[in-house]
Image 1: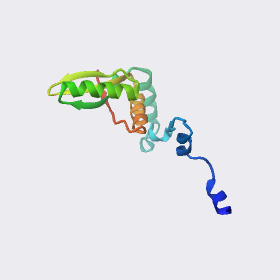
Image 2: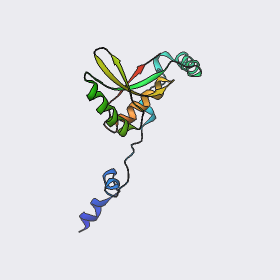
Image 3: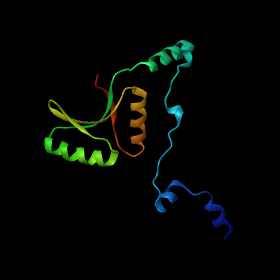
Image 4: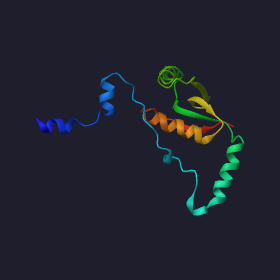
Amino acid sequence: MMAGLAWAGEPTDLDSLFRGNEYKPVLNASLRDTTNVSQGAAVGKAAAKSNNKSEGYYMLQFEAVADFDAAQRRRAQISASTGFAIQVVFDAPFYKLRGGGWTNKKAADDKARELSAYNINAFVVKIR
């Protein structure tokens, strides 16, 4: 009897799912390396200067599909699961499914990492 009580402990993420709560993982800020210790403060200053201006335009690419009809079906599925308006871009011979839009690569990488926690694979592409 006492062993059963000792085993109960704190509720887990799975317990919250059974109660109908949505699981939202918390990303650790240390996953993004902002400074390189071996190069010192010069790297930190260069990174601070680059944060003040726009680096370009970044999007997440989810898939590349050869069939137009399959691309349209996947577009609807990905849009429903991510909440992004998904664009279908033809780049011969594939239809590329892209969504989102950031002017900062770190923000786009963070969103790709967050989606990977939900088993949605995407990678960052620079548009311009």
